[in-house]
Length: 284
Image (cartoon, rainbow, N blue to C red; front, side, top):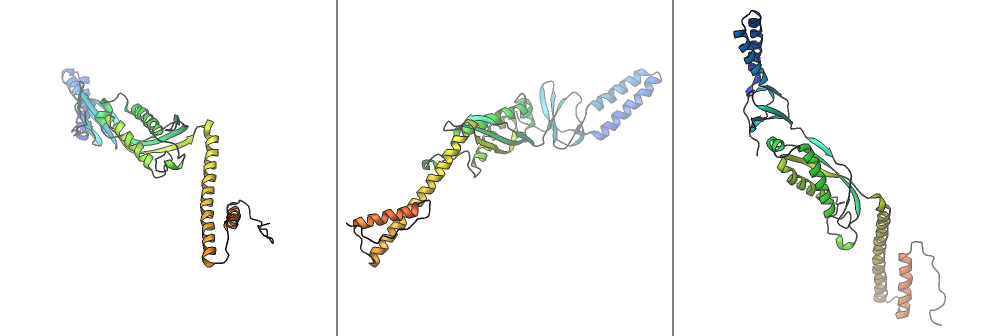
């Protein structure tokens, strides 16, 4: 079922007519002419019953004995068939601040996640007749979408082999875009337009937060050490190559091994090196 427009009449003239009939019938009844006065009053009341006030960003869904007749979106005082049943629906944008959910990510780690969804009613017919309560429908489907997204991706990268994988902590906005797309698909059946969806809270569950922090710190230390070692090896190789090329000193294999060992200790050490001048020889 899709929304269709219901053409309504401007209610200002009909309001005046109904009011005049109502006020004109009362004196006739009082004057002892109820046969004329009562019908006039009834007609005036029927006309006034058909009036509806539609505020900006509001719509009225109408039905007639169970049949959907259409939706009125014109603002102001409008008039339709008084027998139509009318239901107002707000078209304003709404915020859904989701609760923190405790779920397992792709790797099975317990995490806490929450999302904020900005939505509004786009199709009043679907919102009224396709679901029982469209507000509750948005809440449940949003929670289901967040749970599905959290279970499909890892919280963060655990090793270098996963560098190309998308994670929940992705900073490019890809996760938010995927969440918005899934919500749009889920809520379209209820005539809901998703304006924005984004992750508002993301963290490891308290029971593993400490361990994961230590792991992240250890990973950072290992990565830094790896970079230091790679640079040190390159500097040692360059030093040996230049010494050999310029003929500054000729080193045998044992002297080269000692020099490499000393250079690596100096370059990779956390503390400043304390040089020791060797006045002797490596050989006995």
